[in-house]
Image (tube, rainbow, N blue to C red; front, top):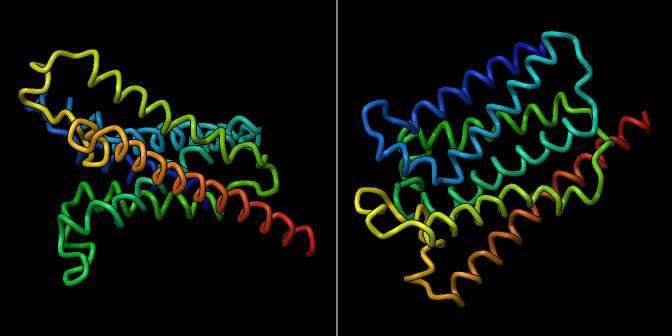
Length: 216
């Protein structure tokens, strides 16, 4: 029951985060928001948590490898979102050092901090341990790679008129026209290392926690 209540609350928070990122009467703004990895990660978490809540409600087994794989992928994505936002973006936009994280807009507070913290709590508290495979460290990269490919397709296969009212580059490190190929690839490389490190930490934590339970 505790797990179900926590996940219902997390599902609600994910929903609030997504709603905060969109405006009902501004289609151009919404089109831009969909291009952000943050929004896509929050939607991924919302879908994943919806599946888990339904299975929990119907008393179905949620410890199958496919659910653990996608839950880990969602956790990795939302953690990467939080890390990159906090250390690469927000420091240049908001006075976090002097006023704290509550000085940022509500959509950023929910999308980059509250949802990641709750999702990681869910992973540590309720996900069965010892069933993750080492290969997941690299396989979880499929989501950010898919995002990058969609981003490149969006920029290269749409005419410039498409971006007259919306941002072409959702993040400064994806602006390959301004950065040039070399620095663009460097940013992608560094971000990939960050994500792989997060994946490794998730796998290692799973391994350690599973052995602690075995030792007991």
